[in-house]
Length: 187
Image (cartoon, rainbow, N blue to C red; front, side, top):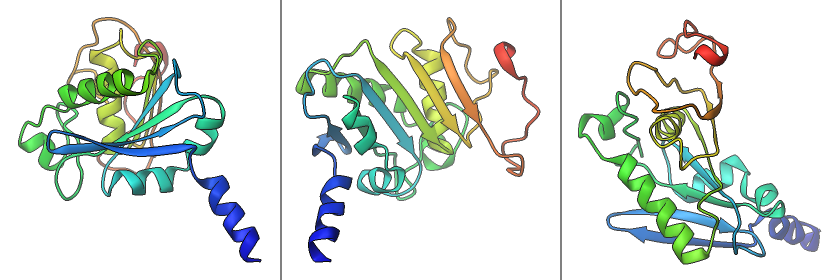
């Protein structure tokens, strides 16, 4: 039984994981077996640490097997919030420049680990989805696609300079994210 549990733990772990400090913040990166020129997935989430994000999302293992590197940047403060331009928590109230932080995370990961900076994908949940969607809207040339879950990017808050591929999912019973936005290409 012990061997079986140990095998499951080893299979769930990424090929290589490292925590990187950038100034006063950090990000975790989980690398595939051959990271050279690997595409990059940036996963933003509110609350907790990068290690918790990695564990809870279970994204790294399947992504690493497919040759993707996965980065889990940490938000700001105890609640690890993001400043998506109009929402939420301490990061927005203090005007934290999370656009610059994500720029630095992506540049650092590409430079240090030899990843493909032309194949960057963002995803997030809740306040992390708002940040991922805002980043993709304002940096469409840097992002191939974005997928947000249970956040709400508002077109009025940030005007994208051009189109970017996105998939946005929200819940009907979230009063702070009403389902009144346009659907399809108009959104």
